[in-house]
Image (cartoon, rainbow, N blue to C red):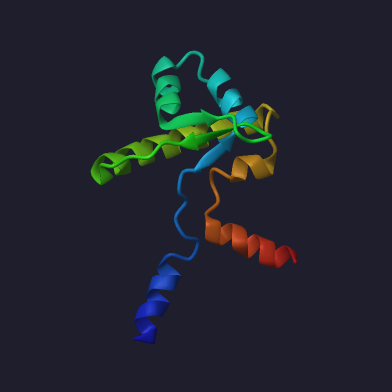
Length: 118
């Protein structure tokens, strides 16, 4: 039984990277500005996230979906778009490396980095 669990842990060493449940407003707006020429992706991003102004720093929250099959397809597309935008904004010096990494590094890997720093 321990061998089975060891194989699972080794094969998923870094965990999967889920799309962020919320994105700070200033980053979301930078993403939208970088999609001015790509109306389809801009509309898709706007359909996936909703602005919540009930925080000191406004945030965009991921909308919920009931259809699991549809969500899998949407999540993959959303992840690609967010990573592309994070790269573009980082290369332009609009976001920090840590802000960029929020779209690339899994939760398990972040925890590992925090432990190493401490």
